[in-house]
Image (tube, rainbow, N blue to C red):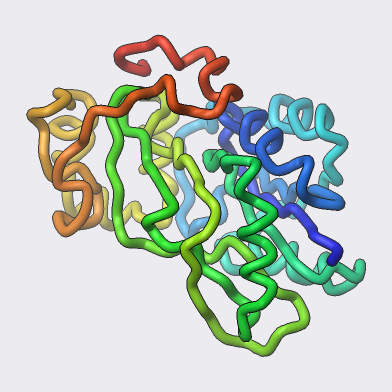
Length: 249
């Protein structure tokens, strides 16, 4: 089984190193598809806090294949790049990882093996296998979403879902500057705009154990944040500069 680690990126330097480190031992190659403009369908006048050179330097530490795909305006087009790459280069399976997702490394082999036995191309990792840290490493939220994170390149089209692997999602454990940039160009921008008090009331004024309804797009998930024992994190996150901060600013 030839496995490709695949990343699409525009920003995300804060956890990019940890993300790559969590998968590098379980894939045959990592390819990073970088775009210098947002690829979630919306543009922004704000300047991206993360530069190409910063992201490239991190990718180079892991000997990633770096591919620049400028001015892709839609996420599905951006993601299609690694499917094309996998087909062209004879990969059997793709492990998709976003720059703010850190796998528990030792759980990857079983996850990939179970996924390989699924009947369809796209395999989602159920919400039971995800934990989203919120505002610091001291609180977390969970949900029932099941993002597609494994692709069986040679299987027929379709989706299935598995309860394997474990992933820490750090996309809401970022600086205020990056969050403001993120919501200005993210695929959820319309949701942020409808809930225009979210940045002030939920993000900037978050109080652990007090603030509720934390998801920017819906009140059905992330109703409460729960205390988290950060000492149970993988060592690569324990070593992260944000580990001891009570609030990431």
